[in-house]
Length: 281
Image (cartoon, rainbow, N blue to C red; front, side, top):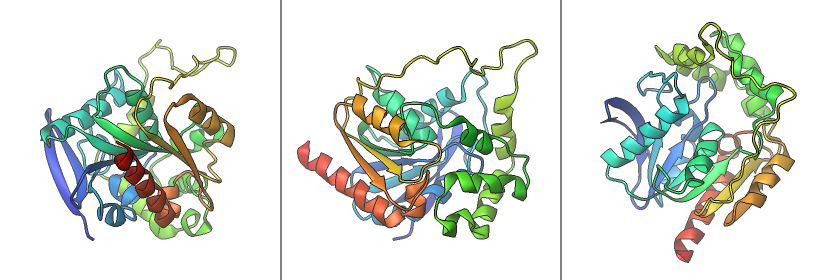
């Protein structure tokens, strides 16, 4: 099954998304590294998922072919409004969601609120633990000078399988998305600070506030790649222990993005979970 490129204008923002299939809506959201996009993250999963769902894979603002906008008061807040606006405009009032890395954390944060901003029926959260991603690995993803070789180190952080880690084709495709007009600038602008303003960096002697996801009230599947360098097993298990209605799955032979490295296994796991939650509803 092929998928179609769509555009929708919601609240003055143009969002690009991929759409395929029919049935219960399934929203796919990508990560936040340089070169991320709906197509590169989900292209190998969409056809199989679309056999059972109406799949919509969105490009966040600043990424892919969506508008290149930056909210210096909080980029995630802008992304939250973007997704809510798209779903409202498309008249989707209930949906299953799959989020990975950045968007996985956003799903958890939204679902943990008394009045969720997104209409989440159930969710699959990939590559996310209770703690923030490992600092050293995260720093590699954030250090990018715009060149092809400058993007190369991030491949080693994101992937485990040499077929992906050393793929020149995939590297070049990621770089092409980095070079979409405005994409690099939007991401790099996140490091700007006004003179005299706190950089926001954590001080070594100050512990960040503990997260608590005990208010998540929707069926949740947590997925981790066996060799994820950003999310150690312990912090992933700590997250699972907090969520009341949770299932977990580790996908072997993959790193941070099992939906890319082991797409067939990932789809099997995700569809099994979504089918069970529908049957139990």
